[in-house]
Length: 272
Image 1: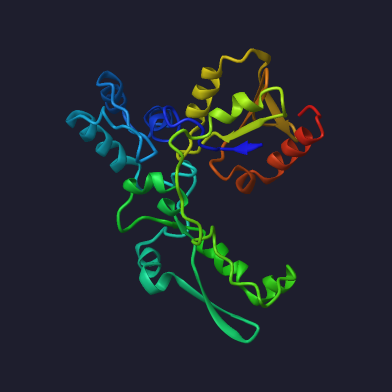
Image 2: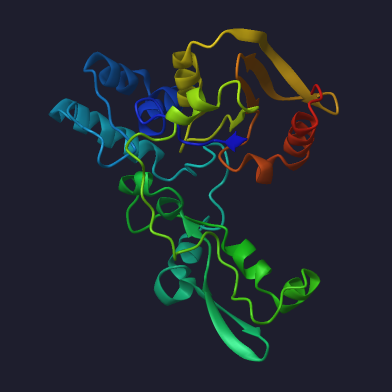
């Protein structure tokens, strides 16, 4: 089971972004046409070839970056909490980004939230010094003494941060497309995608799935939560693909009940 996972550098992340942004009314037709007519292609993996980065492509790509730089790349329709005001944004720079909590009578520090470029390093070129920080409220909440006590977290456990900084991040040049053909008919596979994600857009996911050329066993249909459309479902010979409507990269976080219902149904091999 993989959610909004990067699978094929040729179509995922940056290559899928212009079409996604245009369809979400974030960039004009002129920029999308400039990318397509000049065969422009920019990739997420920094070691991937950028042979199509001509002057016109660079100019167009820069214009696209300007138009979307203040958006939440993980959910293009979601507000960029908590940096809604300049004052708040300034307060999270430098030392202001370091939170403090007392654990077992000892004061300890933690890093507030995550920059979007820290979540997905391949997006770092989209942002400058004033890049938004997501999740600082949640980080503060998880490090409160009463919250730690409610979760029965021992005092010898470190403060909580979003994602670890102790692991070196490296993108595989071959990405992960290769594993799907190996696993076909060996294990059940579910690929789900929050459809307002800009970091690993649904458009790119649909492109690499199409490239597998696996037969369709069940045609595209809606799935529901309490009578409301929660997304769309399609079954291939070896892969089930699910979209989650109106949320982005962190679909289980932002569509809790629908995704929980969907995952439980899939685990138990039930229709949803």
